[in-house]
Image 1 (tube, rainbow, N blue to C red):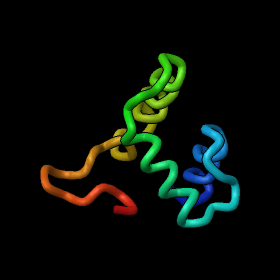
Image 2: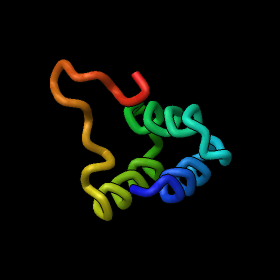
Image 3: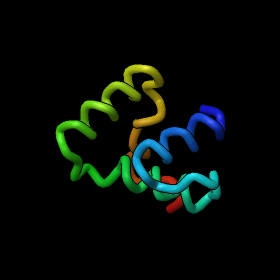
Length: 67
């Protein structure tokens, strides 16, 4: 994904609008948290269907993003 796409997703979920590394780390942590409403799960699933790799968790023993 391009930075602009990540920023747009962060804005959609209310996680920052500046495109700072901290905003994108918040997005990553938000996605990984897993305690989402059904509506949020549906939106994340739609995003995953568009770009399967963006929702892929780190490999076993790997570091989470912005770790």
